[in-house]
Length: 387
Image (tube, rainbow, N blue to C red; front, side, top):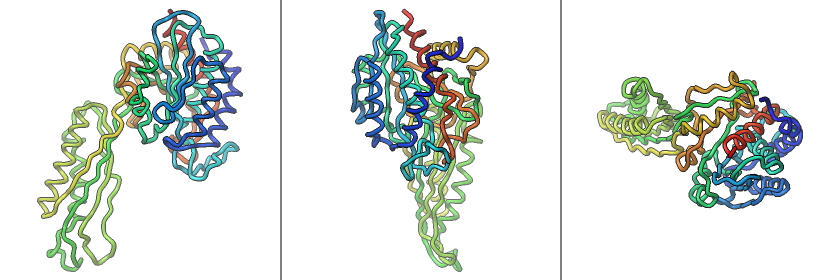
């Protein structure tokens, strides 16, 4: 069964919503106008309840089916943009300097709004759908904030589903897998304290740049020599700050980086080895290393049964061949992970065509994908809440 006719008919309207949201990006929890736009649209569709201010500024809509049912499922879209100056050149480019929807959250909102419109009109399901519009996905853990505010309990959500666009995959295709689909993301900072001095007499100094260079090299062995090669782990040092003149050995240097992992074992291993390598390397050269390690979003882990429901819904929209059921885990991170820790569910990726990559100043969501995302949401509800 292809894209819903009703979703195709809604494409022009959904495109208008998407482009309006694209022109007016807001960051993290400061999505006041975006949240108001969403709430107003939901009310205009006739959803049963619209609750604002969940998790600070999140918006929740509730739609009850025309048949009795005990199950409630949640569908989530993210609302925030990124602090990037847009360079897409599109007519609907951002009107706010230094901010843009470079990750497609404008498209995610438009697709869930489209689904809300159709679901509220037809109500061809048994049970309840909760529409979750979440702030602060881009580093602010807005999903966790909504959960901490009682999202799952207040709305009796039993299962939760998310979706994200994926540049480089054809429009009309989907990708998913059971188990880990996106990585945990952590960050670390290493401050190396040596003893500065004249560059002409290095023997009288403890050079933190040399220590830092040794640490950079040694950290690369965590993946190649400590981690199980069957798994997946990324450790990257992305910052190295030291020195202020060509003839002075500084007293301190600072390194920073990120860790991406899919299992608790790899996450623990990376933290333990980074600390040991930095501290021991510094001591062996006569210096000291202070390591701070911050755990951010956990891995996004799809539940097997709910993944099967997501696959079935995607297949009704795109066909069997257009749904990749064994997508290789992606090392980007997602705070939908917190929702999947709180309730069973699944996160699916949807093709966005040959657009620029995510978090790129030239990126733009592909409006041709809107009917596929709208149809997926509607089919997921109708099949999961069939009786």
